[in-house]
Image 1 (cartoon, rainbow, N blue to C red):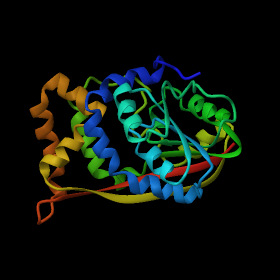
Image 2: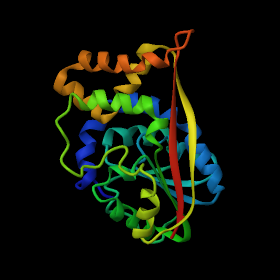
Image 3: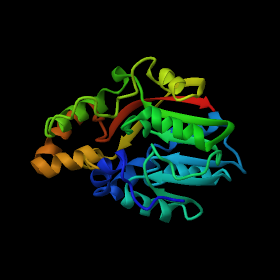
Length: 266
């Protein structure tokens, strides 16, 4: 039965990510090339059933539906799910935690987690649940931020945001928790999955001007929390400074990101 609320690790993120859900929806749309690249690698096609864990505002689900796939999405943030339901009326969206998925065993051909599993309080448990709900020989996909040296803009933004936040408790999950060499492969083995392929995908976010870049940079949960603590303007100014190296002669901003994805089988 679908869960009506998030009570595990997702509850800690829901409050932060819900306040700027509409702004985050615009940012998530920019990730479409990443979603399409992974779906192409999976040979995702009509008739399959897919679960997107940490589905956010539903862009990945929308692209999967366009390929004829039946989709379910799960997220901890009610506001994001409202947007996903409006965006993908064909989908089924559930609020809940990735460590305790509200689905029957062997329900899906594919389970994806785009920048999701690194935020689990227990990533092994989350991936063990993904293995449980995927069908035999199905696919589980973990997508995380790539190498730090290829994500300098993202890391600079994170550093200035974190400067406004209280120190996290030891061992707290974060955006780069699964990005170190060998971590994903070890994680899927511990969860009882078999890695099939690991690869990287690089693309650029292009922003029309500084204001658009700042708006998107402050849409994520940690930035929202930082602005609650310190006020919007100090956070916006600090983020603006990190964007200066990426300004183009025409006034646009071009920021390159690298992601790593691993495809495993149950």
